[in-house]
Every structure is written in C-alpha cells, then in structure tokens.
Amino acid sequence: MPEAYVKVTLKKSILDPQGSAVEKALRQMGHPVEAVRVGKYMEITLSEGLDRAAGEAALEEICRKVLSNPVIEEYAFSLEDRP
Amino acid sequence: MPEAYVKVTLKKSILDPQGSAVEKALRQMGHPVEAVRVGKYMEITLSEGLDRAAGEAALEEICRKVLSNPVIEEYAFSLEDRP
Image (tube, rainbow over all chains, first blue to last red; front, side, top):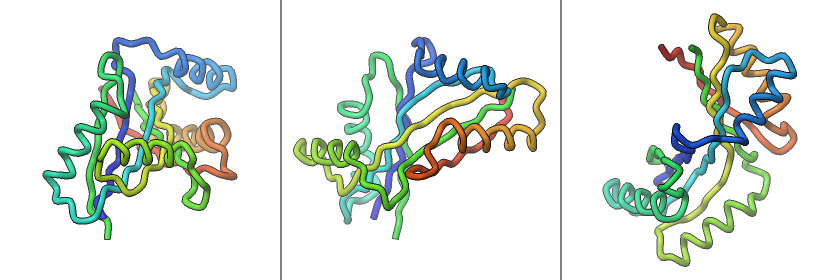
C-alpha cells in the first residue's frame, strides 16, 4: 500500500509565533535551544494499486490544494511502498 | 549549528479524529486516499557548540517532557549538523 509522509511548514520569511512561544518556554526551562519552527505532519495511505507516478501526482495536488496554503506555507512529501 | 527535525504522532492505537476528518474531506473531493493520520512537526535549532551526544540527550528530554504526551503520542527525531 503506498504510504506518503507529508511535512507542511511556514515559509522561512513568515513569522512563526507558535514556534517562538515553544522556543521561549524551552529556554526558560534551561534547554539549549536557539530557534523553533512548528509545522504539520501527515501520514497518508493512498489507495491500493496506484502506480508511483499517479501517486505522486495525486499527492502533489492534495498538498497544493488542500493541505497547505501556498501563500505562506511550503510542503514536502516522500512516498514509500509498504507491504 | 545542530538542527533537529522532530515528528510527534498519535500512537497507532489512539483514534485520530482530525485525521479522519481530513481523510473524509479528501475522499469526497475524489482523491485516492485510504487513511490519514495527523501529527506535529518541529524544526529545532540547538545551541552552537553542543556535541552530538549532548544534543541527542537534550532532544530526548525535550521530546519526552515538553513536545509530546507519552500516554497517547510517540516521537521521532533526526539530528543534523548544518553549517
């Protein structure tokens, strides 16, 4: 079954207040942290029988149109065949 | 500068209503999707000068105590040296 691992992150140029909050909290607790950026992670099981090209095309469309906001976010995915 | 990539996901045995909602939405739009699980993703820049062992120990503690709820979530991280 094709399994996709998707990461959606804010573009580098976009402020990440959630990440800043995590960073401050970690630093106040004494952890050796310089910066934190927070994103989303999704594991997507695609339908059985899709070939690799079709799977990648479907994922590209899902990421662009549904899972990310291309104005402020970027995405990356990897696709694996899991038995 | 040591850079860590952290994934936090719900344990397999825990229901993921957010993932189910995304899955239903994608299917209604006609995408070839079987299952979706949603998690968190974080990029953490550690302080300069930490060696690998110290970085891993710090990350392990950060993940266990702050970024995840070990009752229902599991985490994985990878650590890289970025110039």
